[in-house]
Each structure stands twice: as structure tokens, then as C-alpha cells.
Amino acid sequence: MSKSSRVSEIYAAPGNAGTAEIAENIDISYNDIKALAQVAIKKGIDLTVVGPEGPLANGIVDEFKANGLRVFGPNKAAAMIEASKVFAKDLLQKYGIPCARSAGFSSYAEAKDYLQKQKMSIVIKADGLAAGKGVTVAETMEQALTALSDIMQTRIFGDAGNKVIIEEKMTGKEMSTFAFADANTSFPMISACDYKTVYDGNKGPNTGGMGCYSPPYFLTPELSRRITREIMDPTFKAMIKEGAPYQGVLYGGLMITEEGPRVMEFNARFGDPETQVIIPRLKTDLLDIMLGVTENNLKDLKIEFTDDSCVGVVMASGGYPGIFKKGLPVSGLKDVDKDIMVFHAGTRLDSKGMVVTDGGRVLTIVALGKSIDEAREKVYNNISRIHFDGCHYRKDIALFDKNL
Ligand code: AMP
Ligand code: GLY
Image (cartoon, rainbow, N blue to C red; front, side, top):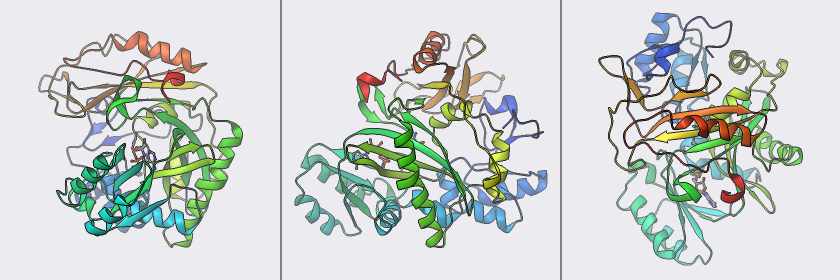
């Protein structure tokens, strides 16, 4: 957004060392909805863009609108599409939108009974928000039973585990697709592939995402059209029929099976690190799109992307997605080539103004190229110039043939 000629000032709450270079960081948690609305009023902020799912699910958009503020993102009712997997699943089933066969439960005994009768591989999902950790793809019945009991009895995700979904495991290629929508129109956007597990070869536990590339190598124009026609458009129409029109960017987590595209989940926001590889491909001014969404005139806009490919690799803290240290100095940020983009996630400036680590996923290193291979090579030629103690990253992002 800082590249838009019409943007004069940017604020980020709470922000990090990266946003400090282009914005004024405001030290308020993104969960403190009321305080954020007050700041937006005081500073005369013309447009607020909501990043994470938590405040969307808690009604930040409703609060901002009630205060006469312009805000990009779905309201509380529409954000349910991410905040409750049972809500999303009921919607998909009611409107015949393709997804895995599944059943939802609020009783542990009933869920366990149903689970024990299943023969195929099974996926167990906590209903609510669980920071990307609420899903277990179980290889054995024992694993499935443990996941169920962790969610519903030990309650490792708290109230997010009041309900569960038990669903059939699908096989195919995974991709994330994004579409903008205002209250009347939707615009099919762009897709990326995210690498969820922490280690090369898709091994190890799931993370928020360790790297990404766009466009997916298997995405043909025909598949793209099917996704729009069979999944994204019907979902927006369904939300309108349900009285909860979706305004913002909708993230479809899809499995491309032999029978066609199927929904795994929806997110009510941009993806991380997907955003870092799709926005660099955007030709249209992002501000125009966001204003188009908030003012319901998306239909008047032409949204265009370049034919370039884009690759992003996440540098994570030692120990992530488990326990990791914070506050470690990050060096080499200025040593990368001019055409490399470095996006910050878990970083902050220490008391001396030095960049230090402050989270699990610390940086995403991104490059555009004429091909995926070119973009990937640029990233990996540069990534080792950046360093912090314990840092690790996958070496096989966008080496798709071996890993998808
Ligand atoms: P979700 O949070 O629903 O995207 O799930 C996280 C990950 O679990 C996905 O990226 C998939 O790798 C996997 N997953 C979720 N649902 C299914 C399913 N029905 N079949 C196979 N894998 C799944
Ligand atoms: N990369 C997955 C997500 O943003 O949920």
C-alpha cells in the first residue's frame, strides 16, 4: 500500500521492525478493537485493513463501521466462514459446494462412537480458531482418537474445541486461492501453493506456512474457471442468501482431487505467507481494490496481475513450531540484492534500534522471476546472507515435482 501514489501515511498496530520502515507503529494489540477504533478516529485514518482472523471474528469491522470508519474485511457474521468450521461446512453442504464428506459433533461420546465406525483415513478438526493447529490428518485410529480427546476432553484449544468436524481424508494437490468481493460482485483473484510442514519433503509438524510460490504449476485456465464457477462464486452467493454478504478477501484452501476442486477450509483474510507472493504480482493499485470493496464498486475495476512467477521462503526461529527464543539479533538484512523483497513477521526493534527476532516465523524472503525456477534461485542465492542464531528454513520451496 505504501507504493500507492494516493497513500500518504500508514500506521501499523502493533507493527514490527519491517513496518517501522514504511509506517508509524502503534503499540496497541490487534485484539483491542475499541482502542483501535479510537486511534483511527483520532488520527483521521481513512481506511483500515484488518490482517488477522481474531479481530475479524470478534467484530472489529462492525465496531469500525458503527463509528463511521471505512474498513476492509468481513463483518463478524461473514467472518464465521473461518471462525467456525461447522458453520463453513454447513454452508458448503447446504449449497452443494464440493468438499469432503464429513460430520459435525458437539458431544464427545457421539463423536467417538462415529469415529470408531470409520474405516478410511480420517481428518479431525476443531471447530474454532486454533492458529492453524486445529487439524489432525490421522494415519491410524489411535491418532484420530487421541486428537479427538485432546480437542474435546483435554480441551487444548479451549472453547474452539466445543465442536469438532470428522471428515474423510482427500488426496490431491493443495492450493490456496484468493478472491475479492464486495456486497454484490466478486473478482477471482490469484492462487499460490503454501508449504505447511516445517521440514523439507513435507515432513514434521504443521506450521502457519514455511514458504510459497505463485502461480501453482498445475493451475490451468480451465481449472481456474472451475474453481471460480464451482467454488468461489457459489460461496459468495450463498453468503448473500444467508444474510451475511462477504466483503473483503476470501481465502479458499483447496484440494485438487481427481474428481475436481474441493474445499478444505476458508479463511476470512489474506494468507501468510501467500500474500507475500501474490501481491508482488499485482499490477492494479491495491488501494483501488480495497476502496472498491469497501464502497461496493468492485465491478468498475479491472484487476490485473503480471505473468511473472513469485517465490517466498520463510526464515523461522530455532525450535519453531515448538518453543523458540526471542530477541536474537538479525544481521545481513541490507546485504541482499536490490530485487529481493524481505517481509518481516516476528521482528521488532530493540532499545538500540537494532532488528531482533520476536516470533516463530521471522522473515519471508521473496523474489519475482520470469519462471518459478528463476525466482526460486534468486531467493536461495540471497537467503544465506541474512542470519540470526538458530534460524532455519526449507530448502525445497517451489521444487514442486518432488514435494506436492
Ligand atoms: P485446514 O486448516 O483445514 O486447511 O487444514 C490444515 C491442513 O490439513 C491442510 O492444509 C491439509 O494439508 C490438511 N487437511 C485438511 N482437511 C483435509 C482433508 N479433508 N483431507 C486431507 N487433508 C486435509
Ligand atoms: N498460510 C496459511 C494461512 O495463512 O492460514
